[in-house]
Image 1 (spheres, rainbow over the protein chains, first blue to last red):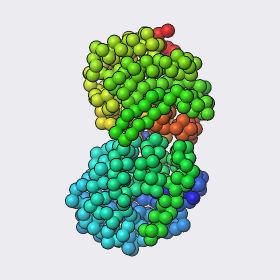
Image 2 (tube, rainbow over the protein chains, first blue to last red):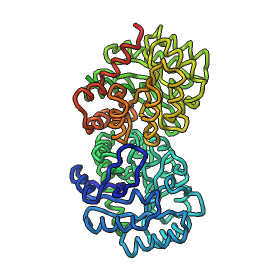
Image 3 (cartoon, one colour):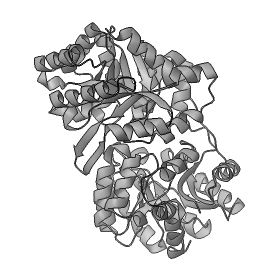
Image 4 (cartoon, chains in turn green, purple):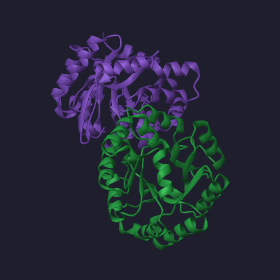
Length: 251
Length: 251
């Protein structure tokens, strides 16, 4: 079983810096999943990461309603909007039926160490949902910033998207070692870094993610399959861990 | 023929334990993936504080398998005149055929003139300069662009073409300076490679794996996901690099 913890739906004209901007609808995402053998995927907005648009949460909700057996929708709000963001999060979870929160400190211009995250995180505690936070070596996204947040909200499961990326994976490992509520999502990271996550933190804390459509999910699956770790650990990473966690989180 | 532009031999001593690869491991990976030849360089100590031994080790590996390996020298810009002398020794006495620079490991901004004596010496010796790009802030493609502009006679291979945080700058930097060649390893955004072929030209893109950080199988699969005509594919996978090294190398 393969469960992807990191995919985006891109249906807007929000352009990133590169020449190509692959749009991916919910239907196309499911087709990509069929092509690469991915059973279920956590999905969230792209546009909503850099523009505050409540309609993006509605879009993700309709995507998951269309493919309830395949897609798990995470909401996106910008912590900079404080109470307003917390209210939108409650609407997205309670009314729209989304199952978690995606944050991107770099695109949303906040640090996890700032007090400004508190209204949203107090709501996260109340709603009992997991949070996936982008990490990397870009500004605001250091794994140790997320680690500080995880220590302040020990009851919140936090998935570290990309686990610090290839520039700061060693900090991701340090953080995950000391915080039970931190999980390492490996998309875009190095093979050797994932092997170190397994040997130093344990395969149970490592989750497969692809970052579709920015990366071809087939390559990320191949990356797991070619790791020098036992086949049981590969199964845990590719899907078993997240399957169990989704049950634990009531999703 | 597949000619890999970027592999490491030796051991990296880093904050989170070590990553290593010996000659036999690399050769067996190359054989398994039909990689005929590979550029090898040192990492860790051999690239930073112990370059003389690093270069000797690379030369010994090349001497053992002259048909399979091409060695690139390490030299630390902070060693100033001694670095230039060591580069000359590595090329003229040891027979190495390129220079490897790693701004963030060696601790200098890629745009700093500290590095210019080494780049100018490389141009004089008619060897290419491979520069790591992406991580960290000192290895930005636009900084490498400054390096390339300062010495238009040198061939600068931009390793990882900006990587996952600076991929959008790789093509603009290469557009500014015709002496920049882009290397594909670890580039998660597969379309950056496609764009670089259409915008910079198929003659200025070279394939690399970055072993042991990435798996050869994954890196080749990445190239295979691109829609390339057979001539472009041949150029990227080996012909371009053969040409750069044959034309630039003094026998």
